[in-house]
Image (tube, rainbow, N blue to C red):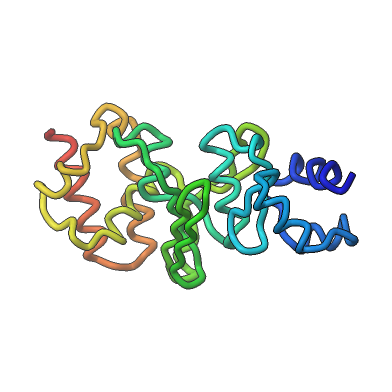
Length: 204
């Protein structure tokens, strides 16, 4: 019966935490969770966080989990660029931007990567609804700006072309939004890189 109770809870949340269990199924012991995990009835995504094996069916489920494992955070960089069709690669990890320290969580589902920024740079994201859960994701323009901010090795036109942006999808974005987002970081080198990227893609 307890597993049925857990299953009902797991269907309502991206990932079930120990705090959720204590609040809603207070009699469920952690050793029971460990036994279910060993037998494959549930998956321990990270210490203290669990899902049902058959509840994770698409990428947006992982995005929702990422947002709940480490808050506040929003999906960005390669994960968002792939989601928007701006880069051709299928991304096997979920990368997010957060205001806490950089973190990497290796789980049976995928690797969750969190890149740290200052709280004043926590903007340019929007709420989206996946298959059943809400998650936060960078706008396409913000995901591109994040790529240039974190990837300091991207310093030339050749480096930018190696990112293999889909030029049609990229050119459909708001060029002014790119610059406005970059300016909010108040880092001239970042604004300069954004301007160079816009020029490179326009001439590609």
